Amino acid sequence: MRFPISMLIGAVVFLAGFPGPARAQEGKGGPAVIAYYADSPTAMDSFQISKVTHIIFSFCHLQGNQLAVGNARDSLTIKRLVEKKQENPGLHVLLSMGGWGGCRDCSAVFSTREGRKEFARSVRSLLDYFQADGIDLDWEYPAIAGFPGHQFLPEDRANFTTLVRDLRRKLGHHKLISFAAGGFTEYLEKSVDWKRVMRQVNFVNLMTYDLVGGYSTVTGHHTPLYSTNAEKESADHAVTLLTSRGVSPAKIALGAAFYGRVFDSVPDINHGLYQSARFKAYVPSKFFPDLLSPEKGFIQYWDDQAQAPFSYDSATGTFATYENARSIALKTKYVMDKKLFGIMFWQLTEDRLPGVLLDAIDEARKAR
Image (cartoon, rainbow, N blue to C red; front, side, top):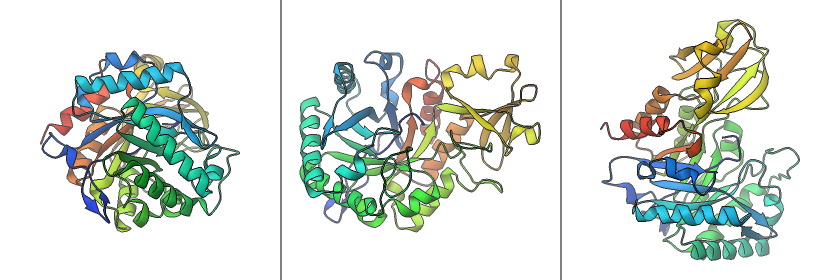
């Protein structure tokens, strides 16, 4: 994702007196399918929302100490998402706060008791107004560098813990609380007190994408399932790290990307993989047939170690890293094998109509 990005959602199990993993999904045909949504009030109508269990509106923002909806179009989009529950009664609709570039004041606001309390009250008011099911926190990132120029402090880690506690007290046990977590080692080790935070939330959305991103100067897989000899960061690496710290697999949603990242100035070595490069573009998957086709000079390759595809145009030195139906299906199978809460992706309307990647998730989910 990296457009603003984001993460979590849940259901009910007792852990330290608070709702835990998502019982709402038991007996309903497999793991949760969690879609971020960042588009117009009508674009959702082109996709089969019945194949989604949770949808996260992206994004609401901080206005002073309060959660706010940006404009009338966003309000209409949220209302339309909530209306989708009429045709998909099991659907959960969450409001996400922040995103990449959308959390400039998070460190300052959440550093004070007054700021956290006022924020929690505003969240409750918005959820009640829209009849939405929960809040997703997409603070990129507590305690480590995120969007250039945004404040980050060591105490953000503890303040994030207190924030989710304040939210749980204000929202009660029946509203969902999730958060988007960076899928890379520095975030996983420094940004969150996992033991305390996971007691309060329903689940975490692991952003296991952008592991090679817009600031990278070497190519690689931006959303690999497994680590390779040349690339440590991966979906499996993040899950293994979290579970080793006591996070329940049943509270982890694994991230997938409905977009790719393209690099140029890439030497014709190893089909462009793990070579010096210059970031060029973020490309939604719906544009792949036009931009990354054989007719445009691209040859597609498969990395057996990473379980991920990539493409390279040797004539122009252009490299692309992305998901396809095969990699998405393998991620979904991994979610089921590891008994994770679900699979999450950024974002729904970047899929190729009528929903190629969403269909791959749905088919793999029902294969058991």
